[in-house]
Image 1 (cartoon, rainbow over the protein chains, first blue to last red):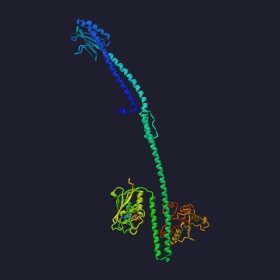
Image 2: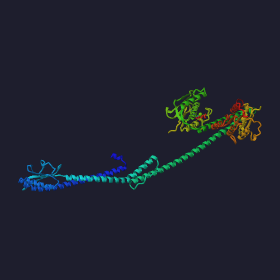
Image 3: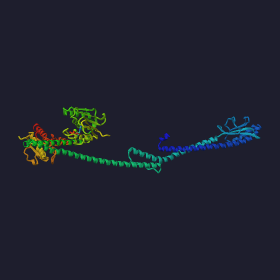
Image 4: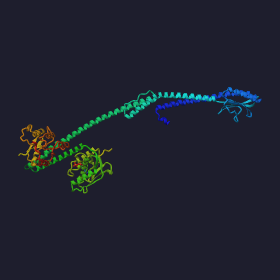
Length: 482
Length: 147
Ligand SMILES: Nc1ncnc2c1ncn2[C@@H]1O[C@H](COP(=O)(O)OP(=O)(O)OP(=O)(O)O)[C@@H](O)[C@H]1O
Ligand SMILES: [Mg+2]
């Protein structure tokens, strides 16, 4: 069966039809032959038995009179029966009394031991018939006739020849028929297979298999074609949806770029237009103080100082706002960033800022992330700057920079400073939002808004924990949670 | 010999007054000529239009050029100056309130000699003006215009 498995469908069909026709023919011929042999043997036996009956009857008196010559003459009458090979008349003791044999057949005939007086049997020598020779109802001897089944063998050869010829003819015929059948069965199947291959190789769903008749294969082909049609339909739907999506994304990107441009123009004009009047206010206040000092009293001078402090503050606010806008616009270039090194750098910078402030900074080694190094530096400057600022009143101010659980992607900056009330934790990251007064700790309130924006740009998260008087911890990630 | 002019190209009268004041406080005595827009600045430099009758052929010792101006902006003026043989080597200081990276890069590409952001506080402004004035009128001998 396994060798059949590897054949093409066409070969399989041919083999099956040839095999079945040959088997049918062979079994039919075998049955026919068996029947023929049987009937032939029956008629031969009947003929020889009749002959033996007659000869047995005629040879009773020669036995009685011990006339061997007459007995031989009677046996010689068997010449007329070509199938008889040999015959013999035996007395009751088994001694041969007279015998006949056709020329060529040399061996004189003898009764095999234990052969009954009346018997007919086929052996390797052919048919052996034995009849008793009787006189007045008493057996006086026996007649043996051996008939050859040469005729039968000839018949069998003839049969074999005929069967071979018919077999050859039917083989050729079966082959021819199966060729035709192959065309109608395996043709469409092969066509289907070729189509399927084209589809799977070329991802071309527009091809169709040639429709076949109304049989099962035809049904298969039309189902296959229907399937292709559906896939093609779905594909084109998908394609359409994709192009639509692409168009939408493109449009959105354009809109985004446009609003980005607007934002840029806005911050540009803010930096230009808001600063100019401030400069005028400050400049002329200064000119008033310098040039009109004589006509000013103490109060007037004080007010002018307040005016100048206000303009300075507003200038700082504008600068901070512009800085924040700049961070949103800056292109993000991700690379391997050594947070530990940056934190050490920031720590050194902080230490240099105020020598009277004995700050202890502990930075965990080997903190790395894939991020924008410039922005990460700004982030750490703000978080560590806050930690430094809000712990400056402590006796042993300590700032720790590290990673949660010593690995993973959550980094933290922790201090043991003033801390804050967790009830306001969500307010921390808003621009210009502060939890401490300017008198306690100086600042604009832009640092954490900047941190939030930097973390957002990286697709990360930032959150804070704190306790008044105990300290604060700021956690952040720089990669999207995948 | 009369000291060469300083050309201040600025449309905001507050800034003009403050700049003049700051230059004076920085003890810079060169006469300050003010152009209120880009066209006027070019007229002065090339002695055309309202400045067609300008006596001296001297180019200013330095041009203090604001970026945001009516008509032609500062960048356009700078470009024209650098294209012309007469003003190619005239020192130009961009004096503006913007710190836009794009502006800075652009003006340096076009051949600005310096870029100074006008500080908000007057003291800082005076310091900047003094540095500017010292640098361009005393320390820096600008090349002679071609004959
Ligand atoms: N480490 C900290 N400990 C306690 N409170 C903090 C800490 N960091 C920030 N805060 C609180 O969050 C507020 C906002 O912080 P943010 O950095 O935005 O502003 P700032 O430090 O006050 O000013 P700026 O950073 O703009 O100079 C702070 O005013 C403070 O109340
Ligand atoms: Mg801060």
